[in-house]
Image (cartoon, rainbow, N blue to C red; front, side, top):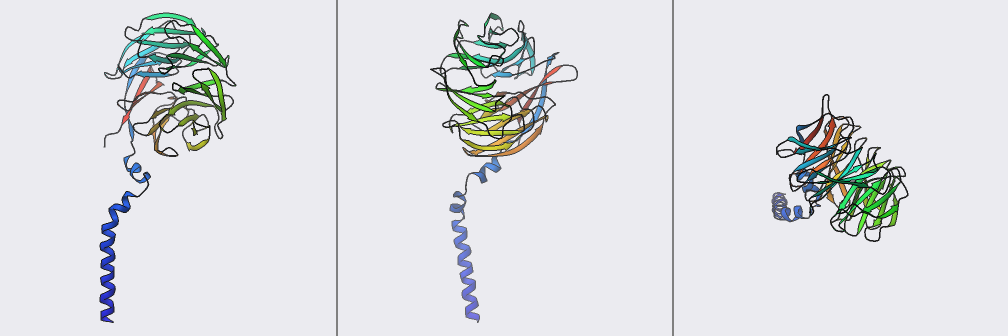
Length: 342
C-alpha cells in the first residue's frame, strides 16, 4: 500500500511538471478573443467646445491634417480647433447644411446645401467660400470625396439619386438613380456603398462606371443611416434606427453579424488600427463601443452616456478621439470622447 501511494504521488508530481512546461504553448493556442478582451479600449468624456447658437444640426468631419472640426449647423458650418478646444470660425451662405467632405490634396472643403439643392465649395485654410454650384439632385444630404477616383459624390435624399461632381469645377459629370433614399456612404477607388434608409437596403456601386452592381437587404435593420467600411477584412457596418448594428461582407452582401446598439444613431466610425466601432445614439443619449476581434466576431465593450440627441460623429483617427455634436441649454456643443487612461 505504501509503495503504491508513493508511485501515485510521483505520477501526480510528473503531471504537474508537464502541465507547467506545456502551459505557455497551450496559452499561445488560445483564440484571439481572450487577449482582445483584456486589451479592449474604453472611452471617457473630455470636455465640450462651445459652437454658439444653433437650432438645427447634422453631420460633422475632422480634417486630420489640421485637427479642425467642421460641424453642419443649419444655416452655417461651425469650425473648431480640436487641439486647443476653441471655436475659430464659421462658414456662412449655406441654406440647410448637411454633409461635409474634404479634398486634402487641393485644400478644398464641400458642404451640402440641402434647401438650395447646391454644393458650397470653400478653401480649407482660409474658410473662404469659392463658389456655390448645383448638386444635380434634390436635397443633397451626404457628401463623399474619394481620393482613389478624385471625384465628389452627392447623395440626394429627395430625388433618390447620386451625382458625380468634379471637385475643381463643381460641374456635375454623372447622375445615378437609386432604389431608395440614400443616407451615409463609404467607398474606395473601385466601389461605393450607400445605405438606403427607407427600404432597409445596402447598395454597391461601381465607382468608375457609376452603375449599381448589387442591392442587399439588411435583415433586422430599420432605417439604416451610419455606414463605414473595413477594407482590410471586407466588412461593411450599418447603424440602424431600431438599435441594431449590422455587419455585411462587401464581396457578396452576406450578413455576418448583428449587435445591439442604442436607439436613433445617425453616424458610425470604424477605426481599423484599434479594431473599434463607435456608434453615437441620439435617441438613447449614449455611445456604443464595439471591439472587433476578427472579421466575423464583434463584442459590445462599453455603453458610454453622452448627451441627448448626440447622434452624429466626427473622428480623429490619429488621437482616437470622437467628437459628438449635441444641443445644449444655451449653445450648441461639440463633445470630446477620448480613450480612457489606464
